[in-house]
Structures are given as C-alpha cells and as structure tokens.
Length: 202
Image (cartoon, rainbow, N blue to C red; front, side):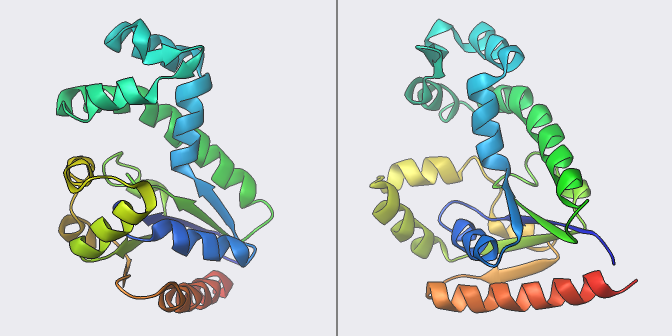
C-alpha cells in the first residue's frame, strides 16, 4: 500500500472546511494546520516572546493572544504579516509533518487542511494538493453570512492570500464550489475513491 499525504487548501469562503469536514465524517484523519498555528500562537513560549518583542506587550492579554490587536497590526501592513508568519509557520509546519507521519503509521491516507499551503511554502510536504475554489461573489456572500463581516474587511483578508488563479496551475486537483454542500460532497467522494485507488497501487 502506498502512503499518501494530501493537502487541501482554498481561500476564505471557498468551502474547504466543509469539504474537509465531510472527509472527516468518512473516518479519515484531517489535520488542521490553521488550528495548530492558533495553538502555537497561544502556547509556544518562544513564539510568544518573538511576537511581544516585535509588536509590543498588547499582543497578549491575560496570557492569550490579543487577536483584535494583532489583526489591526498585521492585516493593514504586509511586512508585519510576513514577520508574524515567519514566527509561526516553521513551528506549524514541523508539528504538521510530525502528526502526518504519526498518522500514516496506522492509515494509508492523511489529509491536512491549510489555507496557506503555497504562501507558507508547504507544498513539497504533500503527495497531492487539492484546491477548493469559488467565484469571488459567492465567497464574499458566504463570509458575510458566516462572520457578519463587511465587504471591505473581506477584501482586506483576501488580499493576504494568493488568488485562486495562481494556485490552479500548481494544484493537482481543483474543485469548483459554487453550488450546494451536497454537490461538494459528491466531489469529495470522487476524490476519496481516486486516492484509495492510488494508495492500493504498489
């Protein structure tokens, strides 16, 4: 059996979390790199020190990341965002790699959900990368419904991610998600069947 590491990415509002949630329901391991990054931001002493040194004591409040303060600092300043990512990405990648290797001791396929696979230069750690994409007006509508965010806020967040057009050519599988969750689940089933076939090839 061939062991496979699969990265799943997509911009905010693309539906990658719905896609990954369905895969998890099918009893496959889905590691969230974004959740790992959040945990590192909150609990890694070395990372916390770097952030406080770079952005000030207000970066943390009662020992927890002051997300509102950090968001105001980094999302309006690309260089600050890059600096923050340089603190968090290496530790996130290392922990993600370790968890993938552990999971593949007992399973043949492991998935990683990560919004910033290409931005964090993680692509070489995967056998295949899956891109979930949608038309921008669809993504904006979804985010507004989910987060009650303004269009200006959404566009600002999108500006910190590579556009889908740049990700398409460097992804192995691309699924459009402009329809219903059921349609997306059908595409997930197609992918799972295909990957299981690849995994069974010696």
